[in-house]
Amino acid sequence: MKTQKTKDMEKALIRDALRKGKHPALEVPYIHTIDIGHGTYWPEGQWEYIDAVIEQQGMFTCLELKVSISDLHSQAAQSYVGHKNYMVCPIDMAFKIRKNKDPWLAKYPKVGIIGWDGQDSFRIIKRCKENHVANNDWRTLAKGMILELSNAMKYLMEE
Image 1 (cartoon, helix red, strand yellow):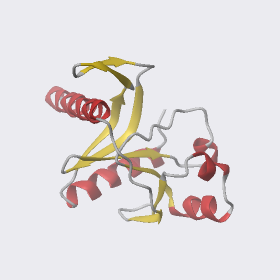
Image 2: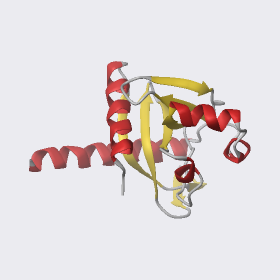
Image 3: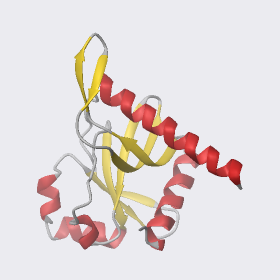
């Protein structure tokens, strides 16, 4: 269950992305796939949900939202499969992770950290390393975003 702080962070991320002309989606379904040849991909593993994905010009940024150190170290999956991958957390937590050399940094060395000020401002605390995204992963991310955005539209139609 999401805390109010998580919900507030999600809304701030959406506002920030839209303000910058990007295309955001929350709770994007994703499943790893393998290429079995001739442009056919087979699901491999279980469905995961990426907290937030932001697309701009065919590039995907995957974001995992964490509101506490215990949340960061929980058993919840952290899916970093985008061109750019960031963990987003309150700014004081972000500085604490970096200052204390939290074990999370060694586990995810290519993932960046974005700090949130509790309002509508975000700041990169640690830059991510850009990744190559295979065609099957790109398609899976695009499909997941379309599915989530379609579900959001269905929800709006019910109101």
